[in-house]
Length: 175
Image (cartoon, rainbow, N blue to C red):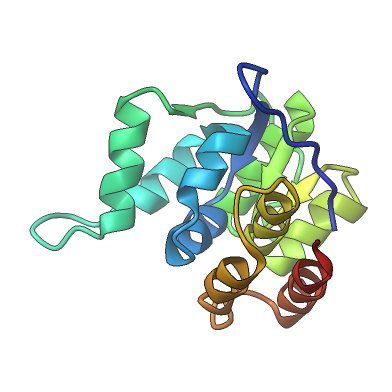
């Protein structure tokens, strides 16, 4: 589990490459605001396409929010200049996110377990899942333990059990 230092006040946010899996999970847990508070968000074009791909009239709220934040300049579209990961390794958006984080030495916001662990263990990146972000905001005092556990439970169907168990254990230990 990554340990992040939370900066308060006007300190610069931590730049991070964001994958679709993270955005989906953050929205599912109603915690996208914490991602905006902690990170300078960058999404590769492939991730933008994945999130914003659904056509009206039935547009998903998380896609509308993402588009509005992107248009307001709170999420930047940023691509890596090179691709180093094998095409068969992960989904296109996950590869683009890991390539960008690796190239810029940024955090990788990714909720998919295999890509998360590969980024951390093989590429040496600071990878952050939505459950790990909830742990961070609890320890920073932005969110109470019970509320965090409630939000975390919303992720149980879309997040690997190990990430959930680790986050639950850490949140329960919080002061």
